[in-house]
Structures are given as structure tokens and as C-alpha cells.
Image 1 (cartoon, rainbow, N blue to C red):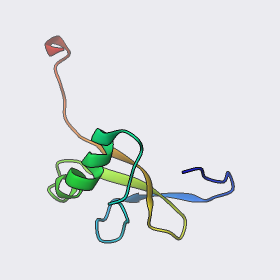
Image 2: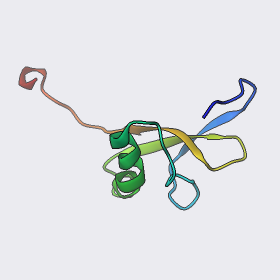
Image 3: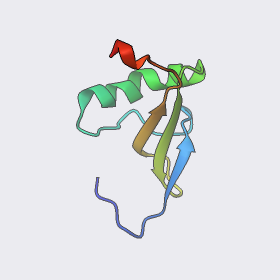
Length: 77
């Protein structure tokens, strides 16, 4: 979905009641499915933090980012 360069965007903490995310589509099925099916429960359980990008004054999710705090031993890679 093209966005005008003058459009004001906001980054907000994901809220499944406040954000329209069920029709989200970035073209990568796994990423679409994660937001639609898993993000809300993992965010609520504090497994991850999900942030969404919305147009100012609207609630349609344009993009999202997930932060997962964890670590991996580089030797295991």
C-alpha cells in the first residue's frame, strides 16, 4: 500500500482490540500469519513485544516489528 510522503505515521504498542491487523498483508505468508495468528498471544504473555506502524489517526496496521529478548551462544550457530 503506497503512502504519501506527507503522511504522518506512528509507532504504537500492539493492541489487538485497538488495531486493525486481521487483513494485514506484506506479501510474505509466514510474516502475515505470525501477526494475524500469534502476535497477540505472545505479546500478552510477555514472550515478545510487538509494535505496529499506523497512519496518524487510523488503526490499520501498515507494518510491524517484534522484539524478542533472548540470547544464543554464537558457538551453537
